[in-house]
Image (cartoon, rainbow, N blue to C red):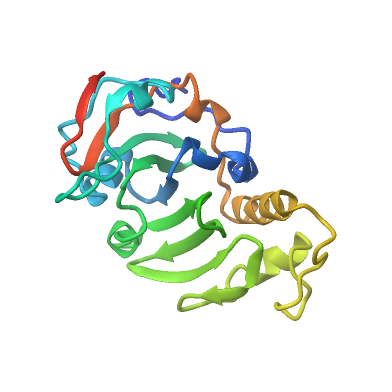
Amino acid sequence: MGDGAHGGEVQGGDGIQWLADAGAQVDGVVFARGIPPAELARRMGADPAAATGPINGTEIWGLDIEGYRPGDDGDGVIRVGEAAGWCFAIEYGDSTGGELLTEIARHGAEVVHFRPMPEQPPALLDYARDGAVLCGFGLGEERWRWGQEPDLLLPELVAAKVLEADGVTPCAPGREPYQVVRRRALGAVGRRFGLRLPRAVLGELRLPAYVVRGTPGLEPR
């Protein structure tokens, strides 16, 4: 396996539950199975021939990325790679993962999208396949689910002691810190789909970046 420097596969033994603590370090993570990283970038609006050289999770904040520019779309950038049989896109700024979820998931592709939402909880998680959102929920609010098959992940949430078997009652309402419940739910989803993502993707791991919205400068400030 490579180290991800050119968008290759990276070691991902950390699972995904640690994303519950990522906060404002990232605006979203898109996992996709059935397509390569460059195709994921294209479906998210990027020019697949316009990747930057590999940059790390610190250097991304040195790019000329304005969150929301008056009179124009906000700028959005992604860094892409592969881990554990899934490709992934780490989203920064006004990225496109949420609004293009069904486009990313077309022609049999599977997609898991996580949005931390630190300024407007709850964090959100969606699963889409073959052009449709099958299920989704807010972390900590798993009793309210949506999609064509809203109960698809209910067995995993029950087994992880997030919800009681009725699919409505939280297992430990108010008795556990919010972050603990978030980690448990993310862990359940990660195990169901075999998702792994190394913490280094937000740090030293170097991955190619793409513009998916707006016209940010991709040269460090």
